[in-house]
Image 1 (tube, rainbow, N blue to C red):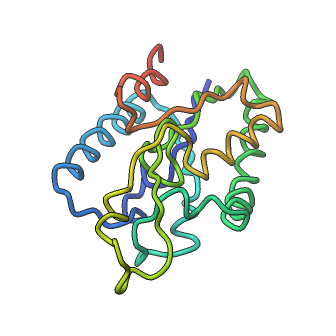
Image 2: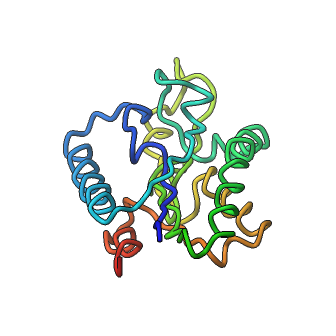
Length: 187
């Protein structure tokens, strides 16, 4: 039997991420990512890389965003279009339970797109040039207990197709590392 994980794009390709400048944050993310991916590879888990809607819309030169900016019908429609073939893949794998077992989906907490338990929120819009209260706006960015927009759309699509009963969704950078590593336990 082949075990399969669907993972957020940047778990396998950090080049798609928004540029980070906090060295401690970068090292912590990299260490957990290496432990998780390394363990999955050791166990022979197949990983399917989900698309990154931020990269496909805004490219590599984008600024950091918050989920509030992506919570609009246009971004949600883009996510739905990107995810449709992956839902079909999930359905096909589940149709052959003797050959395949989907362990779940792994997102990235804090991401405005791929957050599962936490996503970044804030009142960011408009030009930053000469904006009154810019420091207050930037400081107002918080982590909120909700899905990022891609994961929210994915969870909706899983429910629409009845797959939510078969495919757990968790986060790599969850407050407890055990959550994401738990998908690999018992293999």
